[in-house]
Length: 481
Image (cartoon, rainbow, N blue to C red; front, side, top):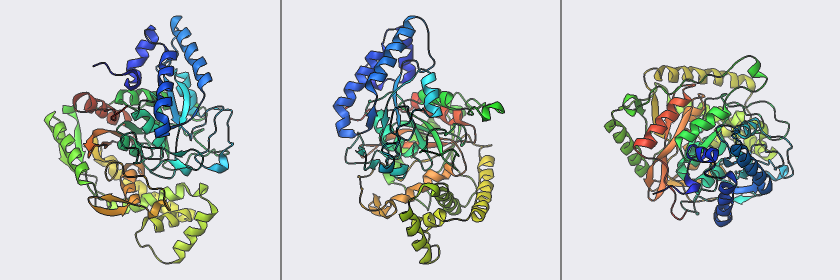
């Protein structure tokens, strides 16, 4: 069967747009009609410039007719996470205090996507200050998962993943400091790539008067095909104008072109975060199929103390985001620390990170880099470390109370939702790239694998995902879309 237009990849669509057998304007109108039909239920796309996009689409079609191709994304309509500046749009991060923050400039990534030929016609929803694995805020409301609208699409790039899965857009770009690309991709059954730290500039994915790039945080692509991840990363990556005066990025190609040549390490569980039994089965099924395809597959992991690694991640993560917390959270953090010593809770470590002295941060950062060296040693012998992306499939929406108090059900027991941050930080805290791709369905909901690889080996994890997509499994549309 022919893939519906709205579920085709950019790599399939661009040749049609270049030849003129498909018009960018027609593709845009098709997506706008789907947004009109499905977005009232999903609330994934929360801002659009329809007339501006139509003009750009017409210009793309006219250019193609003249034989002028803008770039590898010529004429592709796409949306982008609300946290990116797009000229003429509000950039609020879901915070009502920034409701009127309409910028005149584009984020650097947006500039690059447009220069490559993309038509950024809308923005997708996020949680308040990008700080949740759900996507709701007081400005735009709640985004729902197209597989089950009572469940979270993930966060903070939840609108991005939901829109992709429902066929409301062709491409998306998100950000990730705590799995904000990876968990929405996992929950919605699409692809997402968290790049090596520093590979894609953060300039313009920011609130007003923010110039410094924060620790751990990255921006990267979400797509419905692994090939599109590769194209998007190629467009997005590279130094900004200042750094570009002195250095150039040269990411190595994928280490292998066949699954049989990949050395795949498996880590599907950890004492710090329980894994849903059905999800573990899905990941093991994938591992079995990799072995059947000839890959070297073994349960093995870096020689580190995972509990300490997770503790370091939470402390450094919350230190990295401490500059944008509210006075109320600062006061709460002081009260938490005043009550006593470390009880191992996410709340205590969040409070400690929020109030951390720089001298303490330096010591923790040094310890983090010792762990980073262990991961580098591990990836001399292994190409991919395959892990979960979260505890299990998407869980029911819960907007009551504070994030660190909310629980989710895993294997019949209630656990803190923040426990899943373990899998977020496992690669993120040591600056490593990881790709999430579809790993099947569990109880009718999509789940994804996380393919972690060595620093700057981004195209190796993406190349692995391409081969898995071609030979084992890829994107499946949610029912009804």
